[in-house]
Image (cartoon, rainbow, N blue to C red; front, side, top):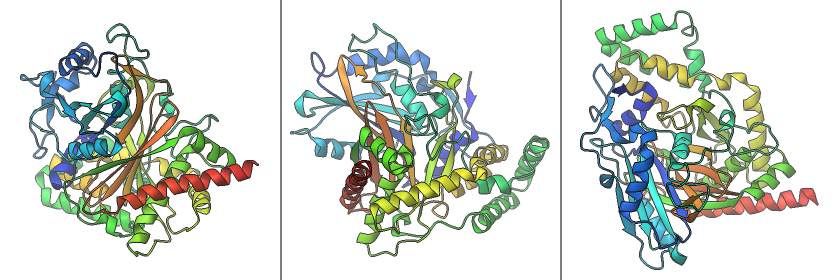
Length: 487
């Protein structure tokens, strides 16, 4: 049966419609070692997917209409022309097939939008990696799946052993679903961004009184009023959001990283051993997530410094998506996320002090229970209004006035996985860039390592190498401080 998009799912279509520079697909690159007999052929991968896609019927569905708007949401419906070979292709890297060649190819792949007239996903077998390696690159529209859901989907391709595909069932992630949405913590305590619902507490307070009891009636009345008086409803939505930003959350500082961007993307990776991140948090306090935030803060600080910009004392504001899935929603598609706002202390010059300030800010945020309320209720209530009004709210929720960059972190599998008999070596994650946001970071752990996938507009951030070098230097400084503290 056709299923309508939820208001949250539709948000990502609306963001893309509003600005040609916004690409709202998520994805990544799974890099494999040599496979017996070489990389799989296109037909082999199609057969492999065909055997397992029954668990994900959405991947055979398209939107009933390619754009949102009017008075109803688009529906998911079976694509009568669906064929796996329209979504699976092959590519070959030029010699020597190293990290640079893969990064350049991936940058072009991630710069292209998905075709809204077909099921919203693509997958490419990438051959020609050094030492006999190969990769599977994929992108899926954010209206179909969120970051944690995409890790679940990846398990349909992967196997727990090097056995021939089809001989075993797709593995189930080991992470406790109640704690997914943060990088793993061995001590059993939540990370700095743990929460069952994430914030925009500001929005929660703005809508206070609409939840629960009279909420459905009042929201439905708001929707009817919006249909009859669309201009007034749009004006009210804008005014409410302006008031929230002004009174509840001071606007994010303006930087050159939040100017208009283009449609091209550059994709790079920073690799960090998970053991180093664990040693830092054990010696200096805080959590694995604090380490990830501090490393990222060092990178964006380097960009602003190189441009001669004033470093905002309050910090740059990162929007951090939060997972809301429960155990029973394994392999469920759609989005189950909210958001946290985290201030990155980029004005602090010393890497170790920057980390300690990151920890302090995270602790203060956790102590403020209001940071765990708000976004999801607002989006759902706004969804009872006509889509044209919801589009205005969606754009405001991702405006540069609210945050400077996105940092998403997703825990991946902790054990080595395989495909077509080849070991999966690493997963390079991608986060989308909203309009006026020139850089974003996705963090994903897998099998003892962590990949920071850094995406940027290459024209707006031509000096991206400085950010990557600063992130690496920050890790080394924190590791040295941790070793000294443990000596």
